Image 1: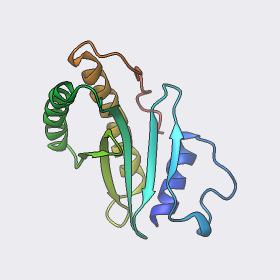
Image 2: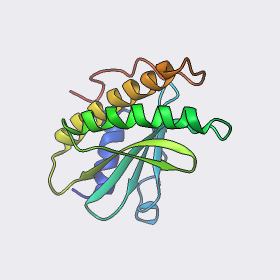
Image 3: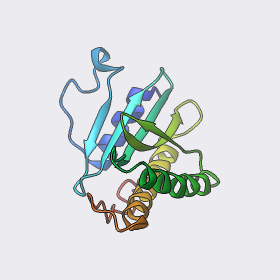
Length: 153
């Protein structure tokens, strides 16, 4: 299955709405995102015919407090390393935001396996956001209660 078809399958399985042309050939390379009820945005970016990136922004770095940013980044990076021992994930800083990422190869995984990994990824997003908010009493958006098992039949 191609990356684009796999992303569409995720949307269908999770019963997320999308426009008629969202997954057309002309939109094949664009990012596809969904904003969940808990304000967490999950983004899918096709990278090639068989690969795509899934990411979520965990927190926005503060321009006025680099020491706090450093503390948060160290703590969350350690958590990402622990999570990475269970399945392949990474983190990045992009456009002033700490981002949690997962690369998917549709050539190596079935749709059920991809949905299972996405469920784990979303649960770990919740963990990382909670940990960030608890780090120093930080204020900000709370993303809690990601529904467990919403992708599983």
